[in-house]
Length: 364
Image 1: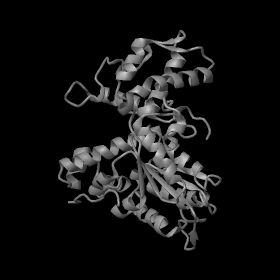
Image 2 (image 1 turned 30 degrees about the horizontal axis):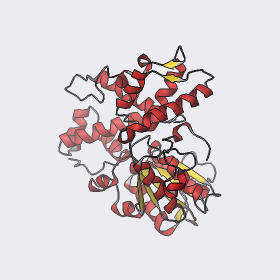
Image 3 (image 1 turned 90 degrees about the vertical axis):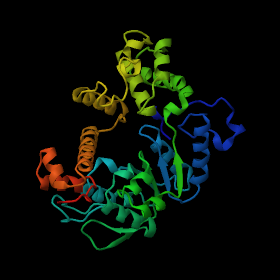
């Protein structure tokens, strides 16, 4: 596996041969009990064709585990195709997954194969599977059960031999209870679940992770930053890291770039980590809308992957969905009343409900 800065977790204190199934995977470093369970399950499931559901907060390394499963499997020489389901609208995602034929929609000037075809004989990784709409979930269920589908705008059935690994940063059982995720699809995906622990559940890893990222970004940026001040390291160890390993990675990179000396000092850390103001401020506790918006954007930037070019859409879309969902709840699901409170017309609200998979509200 290619080295990735966010791949590091912790170097083991015991020798790998003592617990071979718990030894770190290629490209991953870690020795906590929770990570040892992840390694062992990954190795066991890799040799099968079973669907795998990776669960964990954003930034815990789900894609790295998906790649490890693929590379340890008999499919390891085949393609590994990643799709971020949360970054595309329903229509674009359908075309991206299944392909389309010429004339299927405006702009479809030629036939195009989808990601499932591209992953034939290999593995497809469906990240943020919880973001898919009910309509698309029906088509995904068919692919999982029958290994077949049609391109958008076509009637010819295409069969594929593709392993599916899905990931969610939300509890899918909660989504099933809210009827935003199909129960039958959940159980079809959840053949082997692997739960990745958040960084705050293994705080002893933070100093070694920070040291790893420090060396990585010092080398990448041709900087001679090789130390972290004791109070800065203490603040990082105390912080709850809602963005997990990815957030720590981005914080260290920013500190390396901004450090005037060879040491990362406390003043270089973001104010949330220094403890200058409460983390995750709640409305009614000193967090006005402007401050909350700044916190949201800062958190989004710190937790985004280095190559993430969907930050604008992800933040705006999720805020919009949450606003509409909460307003509908406050209006007992009455669309007309919710639209009036939001200051938009009912047709616009209906369109937004479809986009965000919230169509079950009372239209009256």
